[in-house]
Length: 229
Length: 229
DNA sequence: ACAAAAGTGTTGAACGTACACCCATGC
DNA sequence: GCATGGGTGTACGTTCAACACTTTTGT
Image (cartoon, rainbow over all chains, first blue to last red; front, side, top):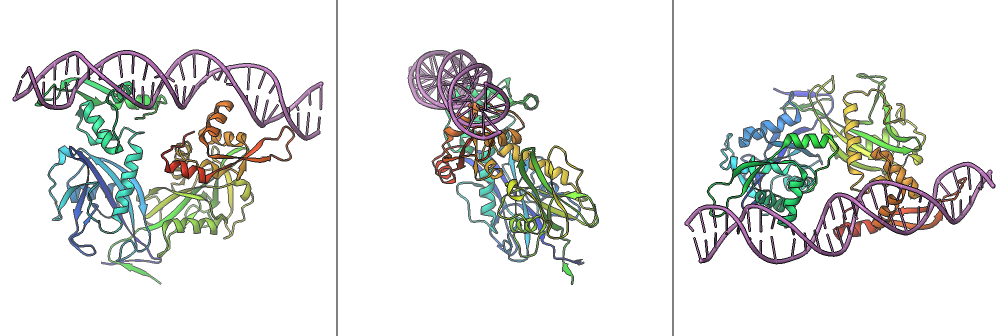
């Protein structure tokens, strides 16, 4: 089967920078390529956009097929389209970044025979194509956005302690935060629901659990409130 | 001449939301389409990406060809690619937004026979394709970004008064600002160079002229300073 | 002299930052 | 009883917001 056009058309792909958080820090999800070019090299999950599929739908489908991930936070990042970024033909890639609760997705079954694995973002192998640049752009975006939008919660379990929340911000922002000031700030925002529950199975005093209150957040945004950490 | 591929490829275009500022407010530059679909309707300037051309280069070329504009501030906005957004075939458009000193580009000669004109952003005709949505996205981006990055200067002449600067922010942010607080704030940033010049030909006391000090700004950014209006 | 816009300071409230100890729990 | 992290308040400096009059210049 062949497809013919009057004018040249580039190929269009989607690629996703997926971030997760664990005790060791921020991780990104990579897949190992099994075909040329860059066979054997690690790369961002992604693939070609189908003719009747929206861009976000394509990104979600590729994530599902290549990594098994579904229903995650996903936002468009940037579109990379310099000629020559793929040695085979002109390929324009619409890049996305995603945040996922890593604890829920510890073991990654690679459903289409490619291996998938989490790598610490500060110790990455060299990636295929220009995926290093895409990943760097995604990290910069995450860093820049996490203070102004409550997207960091996407990296945490639904119920979390204030210490976990602080560690998440410290990891993403790459700087330490003062415990008392941090608690004063986030509790003062009025978007955390204090639960009647504490951590389980810890070898010290158990911390109170909180939940992000999406409803309260949206109500406050509507009334002109600005989230800021 | 025909181009044949093993898999279907979408067409890829670039479209630009170009903003300018005058005494009446914020304007956007539109061109009138002369072919179907949407012949006669107003649309954002843009067109197909050539096979060996980068995306930004394509956007700059289309702006030059369709509106005569060159060397303007241009940033990638978002990529729109829902199936069906163009009735002819699958078209993915990488949208850009641009800022221009409107005074320098008052009369727009349409170089390839299409008419180009500035429209007030708060009184726009209905646009071709999904260009209304693109323009709305661009306005939201401009609104959101102007406070954190010194891009607003791109809308002003190189030498400007503090009142012009304040009007620009008031227009883009769609709210009034206090004159004394505004001056204290912007002068305190240390990125305005005070010139030994004043306005000419005004029927009242002439205001001092200032210039944006790009060098000082970059030095301060390097040292961890954060621009904010 | 008058019209028009330029230019200029103070005060109170809110917020950010620095900082250290006691408490509850599990072992 | 000890080790581990949980939880809490104050004081200071900085920044933001509200607010009105005098000065300069051109006509």
